[in-house]
Image (cartoon, rainbow, N blue to C red; front, top):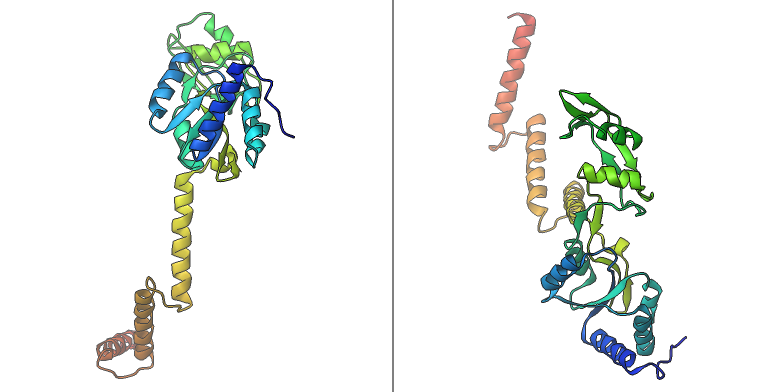
Length: 283
């Protein structure tokens, strides 16, 4: 259902028009989550992306207004507008944009109440702490600790928070002391609208090394099949002919077929068999 904006205040009207102008000027319109990004890091991200993308922070309601006014498939993006959304405009494809934005992320300490993005593991081994209250703090956080050689040592590797769980204040405080930074902070792509299609992070998060390995495996398997089935292609014809020559030679030697190319192999085989027979009969 369309959202009518003729009664918007002038400044909101101007903002809606700016959003529409950018959306019409760039090949890709995306939403990014700005939550938790320090101002200094945001400024650095803007500088790094200046030549490749435009980031526009505005109200979620104005994003919705602008996209509804533009119509077409673009209003489908509004379902993803939530929290601290901002707009990003670029002419890059969504896969390249996702990869670029992932590089803006840095590791930061966890805060109490945040959701853990991964299993947080504390590895066993020595620490830099001297004996003191830290031993009790570690143990209260579920991390077995002891004094060894005048230093605090973690006796067992422990998963203190599982992926998707809320990080408690006790755990957050101890992670800071252990210098464990589990939180990725940076621009997180919520959705990209490109060539009338929506792309969500789950589709864009491609492991390039794994994909390349699968492609190489598929190429090798296809080549093996081509050679085994004797289906000649530009890449397999040499291997097929080489295999045919080897099989023909082996058959000629076993038959035996007295041809100039295999006569030496036939004689060599006969000589070897005669020596073997001689050793058996003891002659």
